[in-house]
Each structure stands twice: as C-alpha cells, then as structure tokens.
Image (cartoon, rainbow, N blue to C red; front, side):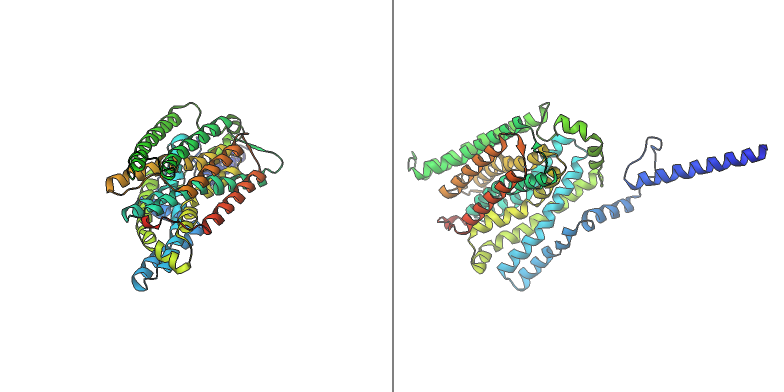
Length: 426
C-alpha cells in the first residue's frame, strides 16, 4: 500500500513538474519571465545579434522596399536618370523612416513615457532634418523651407486626421477623449511658431524694412534664437511637469494598465536599439544626398512643381513613422499618445528644426530666413487655426478625422497648381 502511494506521489510530482516547465517555456516565448523563475539562461551574443537582425530587417513587410535604396545608387551611376533616382530613393527611404520609428519605440521602453515620447518626436523627424541639411548645404533654401513646412502640414492634417479617423472607426459608439489643457498649450506653441514665421514675411511684403535686404534676415535669426530658447523651455516643462502630453490620462492608465505593460515589452535590447538607430540614420543620410541631388531633375522630368515635391511627397515619406505610430495609438484608445506624436512632431519641426536650419545656414553663410513667402505662410496660419478649433473640445471622432484628411487634400491640390515665383533659392 505504501508502495502504491509512493508511486502515485511520484506521478503527481512528475505531472506538476511537466506543467511548470510548460508554463515557463510559454512565458519565455512571450519574452517575459515569471517571478518564480527569475533566472534564465542568457542568449549568446551571436544569437542575440541574429535575433535582432531578424526582428528589425525581416519581420516587417514594408522592408521589402529596402533594396530600392541600393538600386537608386546603382541607377545614379549607370543611367543617371534623375527622375528614376528620385523615385527609387523616395521608395527606399520609406521603410527606413518606419524602422527608425520602431527602433526609437524600442529605446523608449527603457527610458519611460516622457523621454520616450520626445525620442519618438525627435527621430520621427530626423529624415526631414537630414534632407534639409543636405539641401541647405547645396544652397537650396526654398527646398528646405518647403520641406519643413510640408512636414508641419502633414503632421497636423494627414497624420492627426488619419489617427482620429481610424480611432473613431474602431470606437464608433463613443467620442474618444484626450487632455484638453495640454492640447491648448500645444496649439499656443504652434501659434507662436506661426508668429515667428509670419512677421518676416509681413515685413518683406509691406516693404517696411529699416535696412532693405538685411532687416528681414536679421529678424529671422533673432526670432530663431528666441524660438530655440522657447523649445528648450518646453522640453524642460515636459520633463519636469507632473503631467505631460506623452503619458495617457489617469483613467486610461487604470483601465489599460495590464495591456500597456504587455505592449511596452521591448523586443531588442537598449544597446541594440541605439546601434540600429545609428545605422539607419547613416543610411538615411546617404540616400538623402542622392534624393536632394535629383529633386530638380525629377521636377523637370515629371513636369511637377518643385513646391509640390518638397511640400507633399518628401514629408509623406519622412512622416511614415509618425503616421503608423499615431494610428496605432488611436486604435488602442490612447489619444494623448497620438497627439504627442502628431502635434509633438509639428511643434518640434516648427520650434526647433526650422530655427535650427536658420542658425545652421547662418554658420554656412547661407541666407536661410523665416520668410516662407505669402502663399505658404497663409497656408500654415490657416492650418494651425483649423487644427486648434478641432482640438479645443478635447474629443475626437471619425468625422473630425475625415475633415482633417480632406483639408490636407485641399492643401496638396493647392501646391500642385502653385508655381513658386522664387526659384533663385532652389
């Protein structure tokens, strides 16, 4: 009898051990480790590198477009067709912009929501910034102005509109809610950016400069320094404030605490994310040189205005990361994060990238200023006013998203029929 009990006890112990091992293996596959098994065998460096390459390069269907980058360089040296080089480079940069966003999100898992949101906004705009610096180096001041302007318009209308629209379709029976107070602060920052860009244009078109040809440039450089200081103060406020625009609302945090914890589990290590950011940024920089060199030839070859290429096509590619991130957050009912990506990127472009390019141009000896010309400045002013009205209630739905998308289509059509009279800076 004792022998039978002992056998039953051993069999029960064996079943419990097998169940425990199965549970541990299941948790390890999901990338987590339970408290009862705090230690696990670490991956070898070789396996870790291979796994990182697999995740970053082979686990996204958009990466099928990566070969277009090397193909564009090959076409540049073999055929030297500007139109084809521009098209292939544009396609090749698209997955790189998305992967930059992915690597930034992975790094954000180790830095917390506030720094993570700022990193998302920063590296989400790195494509446009690199393109702008290459264009500035080549003396293509109007391309720089139009690309940065297009990025602001794209983030405020297209990215935010798609986020509102997709989130509204998923949560059809209710209005999604975001922090109205933070939206008002962001709208105020955008209006300050419009002020900095508007006054040099008004000074130019009223012919009221004290020193013709130099007052406008001096005002632009002074305003740029003020805007950079304001953006630094904004960053300090975001990092030190108890509540920030990159954290979800308290109610959402309480309701989705477990889901958020699962979503934020990183797939690659911190140093792998940093290395990938460096590699991807270097590759974007290389392709941007070919892209900028081919803009004018592509405009002639396709009979499309340079203003349309710079303001519409380039920002859509550069904003691939923000577009995907904002929509994803909206479909998870995290509208504050969507606004942090879309409006945060617009603020960073208008309050940092634009004045930064003015200062860099000053150092290079290029007369880059904040006079974006009357048509473009009016477009920016109206866009900021429209978006501010849509944000003032603190709610969103699919209809508001649709209206923003339609506004962007009007903007795109306007630039398609707009001929820039100031071609000397291109």
